[in-house]
Image (cartoon, rainbow, N blue to C red):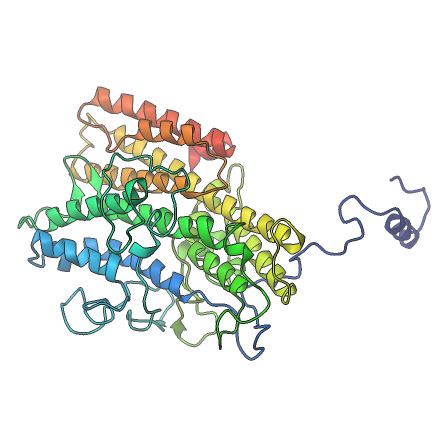
Length: 483
C-alpha cells in the first residue's frame, strides 16, 4: 500500500499493521526464527543437560577419514602385508570399526599392530591443541560404516545402482540387502580389493594409485562413502519426511536420555552433514582453511562439537569458489536450516509430529532446505573436479604429462566420480535419473588418456556431463566455469 505524504512514521506503522501483510498474515515470527546462532540446545527433558547428541555420526565421519589416511600410510603400503591381510585391514576400519567384535579399532592399533586402540587420524591446526577423543576407544562404541552404507541399511532411492557396472554380492549379516541393494557395498569391496592388491604386491614403487588406469582408490573410496553413508543416511533416514521426522517428541528417547526421539533424529542428520556447532561463527574462508576451533578455550578439540567434517567443508569450499562470480551460500543455507529445524522441534516439545500437519510441515521444509543445499554443494564439487580433470587431460601428449600428472589426473577423476556416485541417494533430488545415468555414461569408469585425440574427445564428454549437472541444479555459468 502507498503511504500518504506527510504521515508520521508511527502512524504509517499502525496503518501497515492494520492492513496486514501477505508475508506474515499476523501469524508472528516464522517457525524456528528464534534459533540460536550455534547448534546448542538445552534439554527440555532434563534441563541440566545438553539435548544435542550425534556421537555415532562423528565416529563414522572419523572412520571415513581413517580409511583415506590408512590407505596412503606406510603401514599399509610397505608393512609387508599380503593382499588378503591388506583387505582385512581395510575391512577392520569399514566393517569392524568400534563394534563389539574381536580385533576392532578400540582393541588393535592398525598402524603398529599393537594391542591398544587405534589413534584417530585427525590433524589439528589449532596451536597446541590436542584431541579429546584421541583414540577410537574415546569415540562412540558399536559403530561401523558397513551397517550404514546405502542399500545395506535402507532401500536404494532409485531401486537400482547406477554409475558403475558391478555384480551383486552377499552382504555379511544382512540377508535383505541383496541384488541391487548390495551393489554399493560390492563396489566398496571391489575398490578395497584393488587397493589391497597394490599394497600386497611386494613392490615398494606401487601404492594406492593404479597409474595404468589413473584410478586413485584412496579418493574413490572416501568420496563415495561421503555420499553412500553420510548423505544417504541423512536423506533417506533421519531427515526423511515419512521416517525420521515422524518420531515422537513428547518424552525421552530412552530412559535417562536428555532428548526426544525426534530431537535425536534431527541431531543425527546434522552429524552427518559434519559441521562444527559454531560453524556459522566463521567465514567461509576461515572454515575452509581450518576445520578445528577451540570454542571453549580448554586446549582440546572435541570432535563432537569443535570440528567440521566432510561435506560441510566442501560446502564452504564451493561458496569461496563462487565469491568472485555469482555468489552461493550452500554452507550457511544448510546450517541455518539445521538450526531452525532443531528449534522448531524444541518449540513443539510435548506434541508428536503428524504427517502433513502442524509443525511437521515446517520441519519438512527446513529438512528440504538443508538437504538441497548439501546436495548442491556435492554437485558443485563434481563440477569442480570435472574442471580439474579436464585441466589434467589438456596435458596429455605434451612434455608436462609425466608421472606426477598421471597421479593428479587419478586424484581429480577419483574425486569427481566418487562424489558423482553419491548424488543418486536423495529421495528429494531434482536431478532426474535419466540425466544421472547419462552423466555417468559420459564419465565412464576410468579416465581416457591413451592418446591426445582420445583424451581431447573424453574432455569434451566431461564438458557435456558438466552441462547436464549445471542444468539440473540451475548453476550460474560463471560458477560452473570457475569452480
